[in-house]
Length: 236
Image (tube, rainbow, N blue to C red; front, top):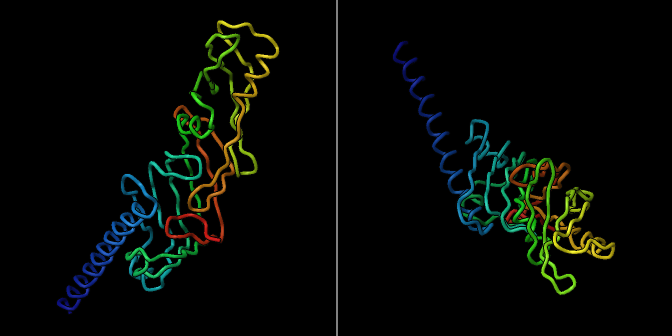
């Protein structure tokens, strides 16, 4: 009886070990595929949560796949940091490992995106634009020629979400050091430093909140019943 009990324990340990090894292999291969398909400079961190992993493989449905990726290009942004969880992703393991995912149905995607101020400035399309955290707010600056003189327009700006589909940056308190602060110049400066950048986030995320942080803007959101293509964009 004791030998039988020992054998059962050994089998259980081996089963758990095999499950964890399978999960590790699956995570590594999926990370490699995402790096390639999403054109990333480094592999994202991929974690398949919940056990047993092999049961999820057999079912072809994964309870929670966590992906942390840096330097993601999406729309007009080129250096996003994403942390997302794919709940209820449906795909055979063979498709995941071979990179042959043409369509990946997912019940729910939730996560957050960090937009650096430098990336936001580039996405503005305004030449020479710089954006930084200043005290409790955000400041934007841009070089401009006024009256034949090269000056710097600066303003306090307020980033907000527009229906979850764009970031709107609105300028106020425009200052023009070393130049006459005429009404015309101030109005033009406000117009220059106010812009909108459309959001086209990977994984089908729709931003619902925006928080101003020291290193950039934190967007959080979710998506439901989406179908992702191999590069984690929303399929048609």
